[in-house]
Length: 407
Image (cartoon, rainbow, N blue to C red; front, side, top):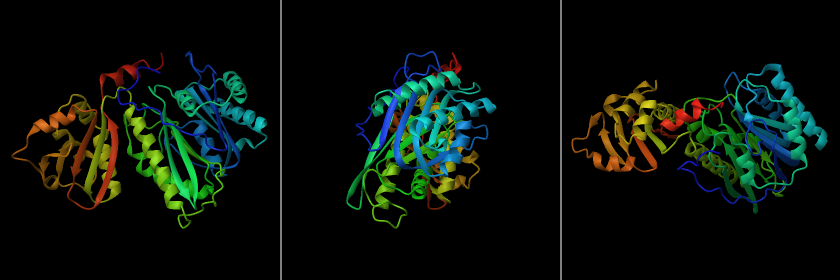
């Protein structure tokens, strides 16, 4: 990993999840002196749900994952770091199918129960020999910590990312934990980068899918670093059922709301961590949009602001240039009225209802912009729609990282 992001937070204490065993190994996909293959074995009967990128140039891992997740069952997860295996045609698909078969042979399960993700450089087929050797090493490696597993799936990440929450289902305590990687090529149109949730709760696959999809819409799909949607974006959720609770099948079941809230909490934590590790990021930015005609409209306006290079560079330069926010609202293609629009930073309004405030004092805004965590407020004055989108600033560090990415 490169120099740690100034927005990094410590890795949390994540307990073991019954029915989940993580292991790591070194396949050598890139010339780096660390493990780059994560293998996670799952108990028989584990339910699975997933959301995947809508990028039409997606990897074979994504294509196969979409098919596999409809079966609702999983026995293993393999994550390769350093090579995305995207835009690699039949050779890429063969490499994934070989991994699935190798692990399935070891576990005595169907290859369709083995999920594979890869991340890294696009356009280079995953080396089958390295993958085979890496899997062989991982199958016999000792169990590792969650922090080690999180570090292993990273590429340009500067710190390992994890989150945990708990819920009570019918008197039974269950744990939901997650790890994620992501730093650049972040503008999810479904989920985000590579993220994995694990729980010991007993959950029917259909309800697990509903919880994950709902959480995704308000977390992963509300973050952006650079407006680029990856070819490999995947979020998978696995439920081993080892906690012994009465299985949840719908929101009508006791404890369902608590479980769904915990899933949302873990997803929100993970989404924020990705933004905090945005390539070259120095500031974490929350864009709060209210008064829109709908929540969806508010989200799209928030993303237009969060994706604007002019807004992001102004924040990087600690420049209280609220005119750039006005510009971004106007270009979003959503209902907006110039004469009702209000803009603020850090709870200090700069303009209200289409006019600069006559007594506007830029000093508190300037002080706010010197902080690591920045808040931008937009009130459209049109309706009840609201949304929050999270992003980071755009600095020279982003250019340096991506100009040298393949070297």
